[in-house]
Length: 486
Ligand SMILES: *[C@@H]1O[C@H](CO)[C@@H](O)[C@H](O)[C@H]1NC(C)=O
Ligand SMILES: *[C@@H]1O[C@H](CO)[C@@H](O)[C@H](O)[C@H]1NC(C)=O
Ligand SMILES: *[C@@H]1O[C@H](CO)[C@@H](O)[C@H](O)[C@H]1NC(C)=O
Ligand SMILES: *[C@@H]1O[C@H](CO)[C@@H](O)[C@H](O)[C@H]1NC(C)=O
Ligand SMILES: *[C@@H]1O[C@H](CO)[C@@H](O)[C@H](O)[C@H]1NC(C)=O
Ligand SMILES: *[C@@H]1O[C@H](CO)[C@@H](O)[C@H](O)[C@H]1NC(C)=O
Image (cartoon, rainbow, N blue to C red; front, top):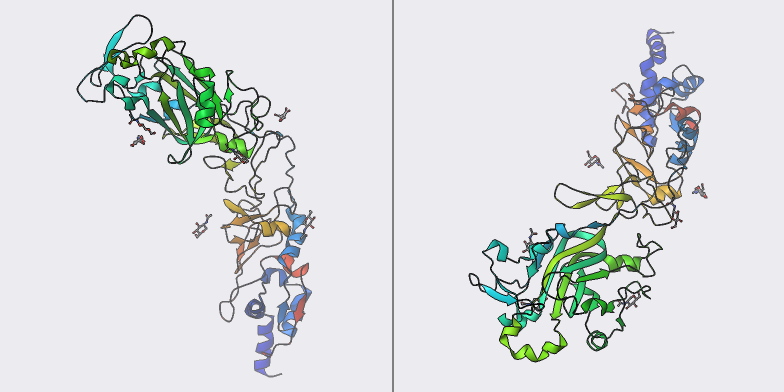
């Protein structure tokens, strides 16, 4: 035996040589090997004798299946979850609104007072002035919660255009609107007007018409009149009502108008706290509310007075308070709606949902697709199994269909894919290691630092090894081909 051959044999048994073979050739076929596992096993001999290992790596799926035995968790499924969705209670959102009116008494001719008189009782008269506090009748007074002040429109004496006055409320965000209540001030309720809704502030559609005469419903709006306070049953979720009940001339002051938007409609379940159909959701949903006043209420015996200018100053609209009963749009995932720092209403999301409207699952809860909670079903977002190595996951329908994502109950159910696995982990569940790293079989995937560097000789190696011991022993076929190096 000559000297070089002895050196060769010594070198062969040296660890580095094994590293050389394993680390160098494996990556070319997508092979990943763990040096630690191979050392001291029978396979080693085969490898360095045959000089090349072609590791036919198993599919992702089967690897996951093998691994599942080890990764089963002791977490038990929470069967105590409420079976119904959660819905916030109604809040009055009128005080949050940006409210505008296109005509206000005392602002018509800046600096000049406008005289008006009450329609009822003795002919009490006064003036509006935008510069004197207690003569001011700004529209903001309709939503300030103070019943001693009120908004008032210019009287008809100022011009015939003041029979048509529009008030617009921007609620700053969309809500489901359940009711709108108006409390009038020192004038009767309007005779004819339209309550409208809008999502974008440009396109408005009617919610309800209010008229003094039943014939006006048919003649002006082509609808049959509702004469009672509120219809007990409304045939369709999107039907626009025409009501005569709230346009009566009496009382001459402090009259109220109640507009119930969802009440009595098919999409409103028994107690009517949950909007149940998409049609009714569309119908009740609004960010903007508009009041289009179109006709004054005039006592019949006063019709002859309309030619008298001093009578015209008795005709105007006035409002003490507007209430808007609204429900935050939380998609069945919140029982509360809280006020955020910017004065917006924000769903207090539960069921691991996130977003202003609980419209998505929180970042680590995408094992199953997001679903809306309804009156009869709850849809809780499920946490992804990322072994504590990712803060985010996404739902992937393809992964779901192939049963390759492990859930926190140790089952291959759902489509959660962990994003940005940390600590050199990788894989759908952060259960693997990145190239160049491996996880020894005695280290669980949820260990703080599950992956160790491959420790391959940088000379003649790409540094990639089997990412997990089990890949070699339990896994795919290992094929050895004679290498030309020896
Ligand atoms: C309120 O609405 C008016 C008219 O739409 C707009 O000009 C004004 O900027 C709004 N104000 C606030 C505080 O949003
Ligand atoms: C207020 O706006 C409405 C349109 O919404 C218009 O028909 C009406 O004439 C306006 N009124 C005044 C006094 O400008
Ligand atoms: C209500 O909805 C039905 C069906 O969705 C539609 O045909 C009808 O035009 C709607 N009616 C109104 C007033 O929007
Ligand atoms: C769920 O809703 C149904 C009807 O929608 C009701 O009968 C039941 O009491 C509700 N259950 C819970 C837990 O709220
Ligand atoms: C996934 O699992 C479900 C039930 O657990 C089964 O019905 C389905 O056939 C599986 N799909 C695949 C691709 O294995
Ligand atoms: C993942 O990491 C990349 C690169 O660092 C970053 O751009 C991306 O925003 C991260 N994604 C998430 C969901 O954290």
